[in-house]
Image (cartoon, rainbow, N blue to C red; front, side):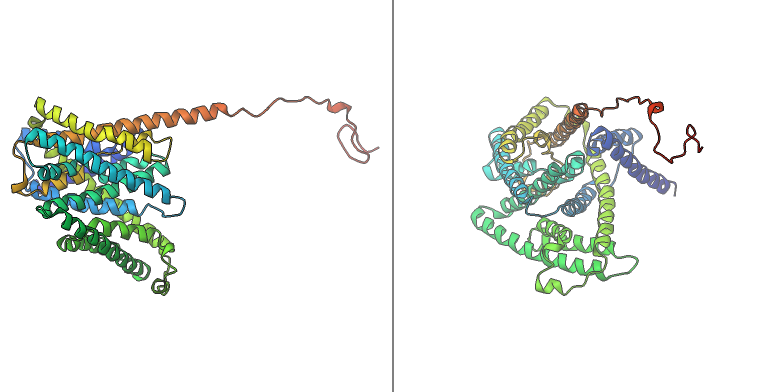
Length: 432
């Protein structure tokens, strides 16, 4: 019973500390993810000192990570508005994510191929997870950016996640038939788009009609169930989740369709806001425990080797150098410097690496290099966020200085020389 109380104390304490990290991140622009990872590392040191350990970590990390990925992509999609004005932004974000995935993946694959003497397919299997932009890290950190830059980050990181997962499993399951598997993946994406649209219509009807006290949690469970089912059927589950969020938040665009027009909605806007708040709360909890456990799973001894640091630095260079060119050419905005640093690795990177079967592992590849890559990319993201905050503050101060103060010069008037109009009663001119 005493152990149970300690566990309850630890779980509630982690959530409260994470909330404080979020509040601190809002003012300092240091992403809370960075603080959570380092908290997990510190937790490992403390528990090892007292001889305790977290059981079933290898099972907990993938489960919590997958659920977190579903909620983070859904939360990001529910914040996006699709209009004619931002269609260009969506196209540019798509180009940047796909080019970044392919060019960065190619550079990392070449590094692994020549450094560890493995075939190209296995090199790409390792490269794709490390080339993907982690939406789980990028989207929460983008809260401090301007609305346009934040939308760009949400689209780019979500599309990068989806494309990276599709490419990873195409390589993993292709087994030499890459072309055939790639064609199958294109059909899979198309089918997933249809499934996601149908699921969004069903959720729209449920949100509009169900008035039970408990209704949104079963809907979230239904989305997770749909994700797992799509995974078993070899569809693209992240595509389904993203389409559900986009359609729900932009339902006015599909409302004119004949079948959809018949569905009567009652207070859908208010109910959708409640649903968004619940998704945000659930995402916060799941993200907290994933990144704390990720930090806890890191062994300090794995990070203390020179060759690990050299490899991690080379991996950072492989994604950062091409990103400079890609963002400047395709982002479509002169004020895009913060986007250079918004290509972090994290949840999706770890999940895909953990998905590799025993037969596909490179024994000589140091696992510490992957964790260092995650930490380095998070620190670069922190640098970009802090730098953006300072520049934004300077622009505000410069704009305030340019505004000239209003002319407050007073003019003295000799009121004694002014005679009142005839018939007006004043103290100096009484009625005679």
